[in-house]
Image 1: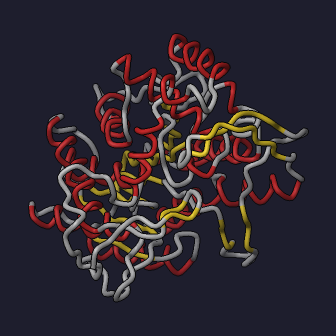
Image 2: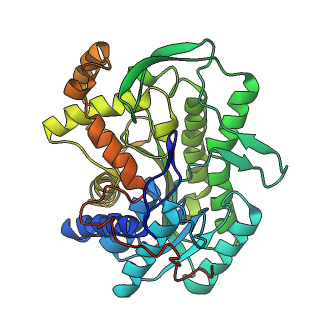
Length: 397
């Protein structure tokens, strides 16, 4: 079938298998071009199929030679219907890993559930023995609690009062004003339940109970802080409360790993185009302006550049993990440089539908968005027939 992008708001309903495969190959090529990293050797990635989780799996495998198990929740293909992009990404990753003799297996299902945890632990016990790193990179908006079976839904809302500011429809380039009503206490609690640290902690406790953590084990979860302009709706809003909980959880996990000399870290990453960030009002306009400034400075990075630098320069360089005063790894350092933020703030005040093409980089935003689904990838012939029925080698589909 000929596969084209079909849009519904900030979601693309189709994905291109060859485009996704080329994206994965590009990430592998980048990691290999940067040389070997003396990093982890047996890695579990929870949320491994897209974004920072996928880049973490690529970096661990092709930078450090690690055996990897990836957990994700993706839609497999059906005749005449494409899979979700993470399915195709994971198939491509396993195929490339198999070519060079790297162990790579995947589990598709709800990572919040007891069943998927048990299946994952059994696979680790059978094939790897113990893991020396767990990456926690889930970005689900919904979580069914494994104990209470309550379905929690996260919300993106300010706390205390309503919030209004500029945003952009990245499909049309129209800059407008968006207003968001404040969160209720229930909204805050639900968002913490979905995006906070409880499930991360549950995973580590389950692994620990089965003696599946190696001496010197590390675990990393990903977060974001961002600029002053997004603070009311992000870091000081419902998601910010969840991220505060995530950071507090890192200290609790570390305390419970002292006998293993283990550590838990939160890595604060740069603003990038992801399926999640595209749904957040204000963020697409901010990213468009940020990309323009950072590309002009020569400091722009995508997910793979971020994560390769995290491993090479923050986690596994000279045996010392570099953290800020709050114990966080700051790989958003280039984004948050004073001169970058001052320039973005100046552009923000000016931004309008009429001038965004000149002062921002909306084409790059659109391209990065399409890339998430395997479209607009250089070197891919989108006029050719594609076989949508791609299977992941380690998963019976």
